[in-house]
Amino acid sequence: MKIKVTTLYVDDQEKALRFYTDVLGFAKKADFSQGPYRWLTVASPEEPDGVELQLALNNNPAARTYQQALFQQNQPAIMFFTDNIKSDHERIKALGAEFTMPPTDVTASTIAMLKDTCGNLVQLTQLKRW
Amino acid sequence: MTDREQYAPGPANVARIQKDGEKWTLVLVRELRHSPEKVWEAITDPAHLREWAPFDADGSLATAGATVKLTTVGAPVPHATETTVTRAEAPKLLEYKWGAFDTRWELEAFAGGTRLTLWANIGRRFISMGAAGWHICFDVLDRLLNGTPIGRMVGPDAAKFGGWQRLNAEYAKQFGIEAPNWPSQDGSRVVSQGGSKNNV
Image 1 (spheres, helix red, strand yellow):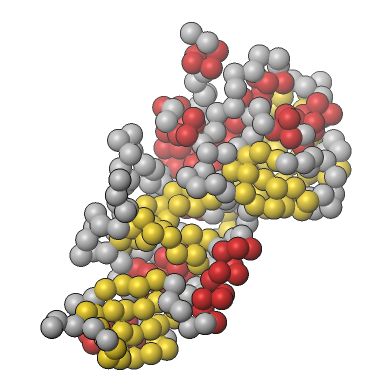
Image 2 (cartoon, one colour):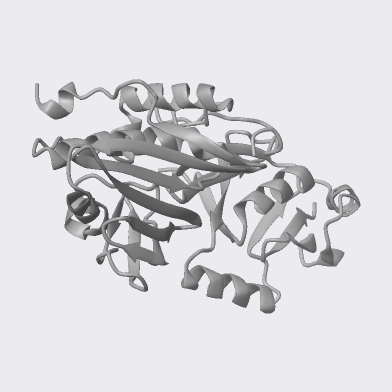
């Protein structure tokens, strides 16, 4: 067994695809549909065969409730690791994304938080070297 | 060989696209040798739908206002959407949404049979897949009505099957779009780089 996919609920898959590729810089990996169902994933260009992020439509009440509750409680729905949070923060901000927390020192890491325009908070994390 | 094994879809001439600017609607027309009443039953009754349609319904679609759960058969994760039938005028007109897609059926008495037309506003990106899938579903429906059922062919049953791949490619060519990505036979997926700008 492998950990291959993690799922993120979004309120609009087309908008999510644009944000996660054009703004965050991931690459579209899988995209197919069956009837109204659409399987859509992105992957990091640094790790094209790494874990895929599935952008799943939050079209069921449980998903919507979960997504909204996390957002209201300021909890990230997903976390990405970076080797340079400062430059990623500048780059992503310049592309128009709204950060709710600039790069901030915390225990063992530096974190930042931004809105993904699709109902989620995304955390960027850079681990500190000891 | 069974009828199911022998089945091969005909040329890609059942579906066309109706364009309203950027909004594309898939239109499929099929002439069936059975009465509108019989065809109406086949497109509204859950037991009939289970024999040919790409979804299962947990109730009849034959009444306006009815709320019905439609489960996509063979989706990569369990997938169901609830719909309300917006129009049901037996045996002529049926309208509801399948997920976000407006789905409209018209039945027209025609030379002792029925001319069945389906309009589905599925997104442009996957419209050739929808055309190929419904094309095969209509063939299966035709055989079901004729009393020689070959069994439902949807989801993985359709996709692994060469006829579906050919129809998808032929319809994509006719519609002037790129055939959508599909998982290849070894289970890996086609990677396409870049955003969605080119083929939305």
